[in-house]
Picture 1 (cartoon, rainbow, N blue to C red):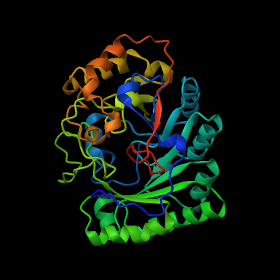
Picture 2 (picture 1 turned 180 degrees about the horizontal axis):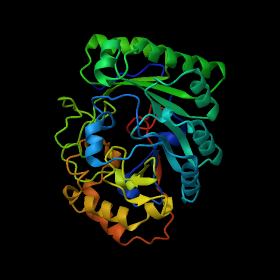
Picture 3 (picture 1 turned 30 degrees about the vertical axis):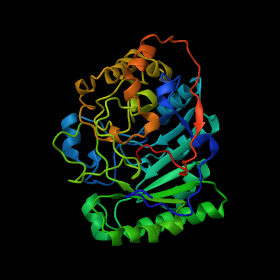
Length: 375
């Protein structure tokens, strides 16, 4: 097991459709995103030291709005996904904030599952708001998987990291109830508990595993991650990880082309569409679903220009992308550096009516029941 990643031995493999990987160098341009993030709420009940949402001064400086996604906007997104020529592989109902702050979250999940516009629907929560009512709501909605973001393993650690919360046992109890209730109801919901290694001791890592392995289907200790457009603010707390967020994939520090614009869309709470999951400042917005359809954004001129900037070595001209650390952690199957010229030529010659999908190949090393994007 690579350093920094500790997995629960009881981890359950993901369905075959989700074990499939796409060789991006061969598949781009794609007729539809492989994954999407949809942000139910971009505010948070925590103020974590390694998260831009936890820094009010940073948010004020960039003028980021705060709010929750309304159900009509979410419905429009689902309808837009149905228009894609190929299904979205994974939808993650989170991005910048705490999803449980949105009272429509259960309705959103149920609608997406009913419409079958994605193969897998996931969310992430810090579990402080995960009471018994909300736990049952998530189970009954048909949610496929949930990530629990554990911030530390004792009260003082929680107080130091979150600045607003200091009841570690409440988190454990909330997750334990979710785990027991989903078993009682016979739900296939997969629970992934993870903690970010923001300077944890070996004893603290062992405590996390001991506390959460019995009440989760998957557990992991993740590397701290960098963000886009953070300027002089150190969201990595002085740490210098050797791997991506998964704690496994070695960083490619000299990466030129970020894979995200070619396979992902991130819909902010207000319907603006960003290129990736770490666009906390909304500086990579390439569309607005209040005025456009998802398909128009995916095939649109703004996203096309964004992709070509990466492919032609002009990433430094994009403020949010210039010094982004997160892009270094993508795996080899997503790498486009060696084929950048060929991919650029394909995009420039692209027929907008093309609908042929990517070729999926089975990854024999895929063992996790959850997507690898941030969570």
